[in-house]
Image (cartoon, rainbow, N blue to C red; front, side, top):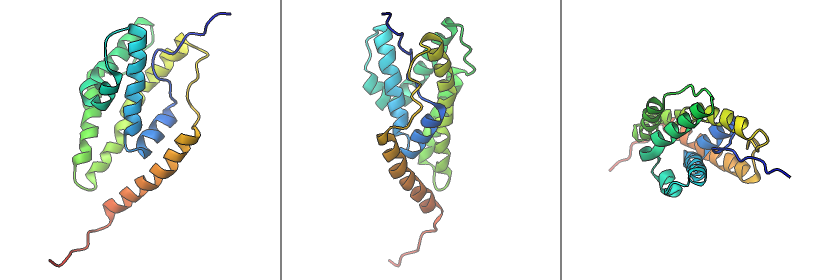
Amino acid sequence: MQEQPEPLFFPVSPLKLVVMSTVTFGFYEAFWFYKNWQLVKLRTQRPMQPFWRAVFPVLFCYSLFKEIHHTASQKSITATYNPLLLAVAWIALRISVRLPDPYWLVVCLSPLVLLLVQQTVNRLNTSVAPAHNPNSHFSAWNIVGVVVGGILFILAIIGTFIPEVPTDG
């Protein structure tokens, strides 16, 4: 029996990537970086620490975006993004969390940047490993994350728009 080829990068559906990234306040994005770097390390045998690349994605996002873009080119898959521009956009959006209310909410757009990369990843994975699991279903833990994170996310948005009550003091 012939062994099925493995996906080159972390497979995840666009919907799951955006939902999980949003309701986990970006923690799923760190997971996304970790899983992609883990697969790069396994495939290339290059010495690297996927955990630290996921903990400090601002330092390594460009190299991952470039790695995916380059791999797509090698496999004749069109990557419709510029790795440098996307890295700058993603970093700017992640840093925007430090902006005052309500401007920090633009950080919620950061999964859309990853979505552009993930579209290329999904085309690559389908080309190389047509029978791979596309990771489009929400597991029980994902659903718990969506419910708990969704409630916290809604409360954070509400709290952003409720005016502060002046205190005497």
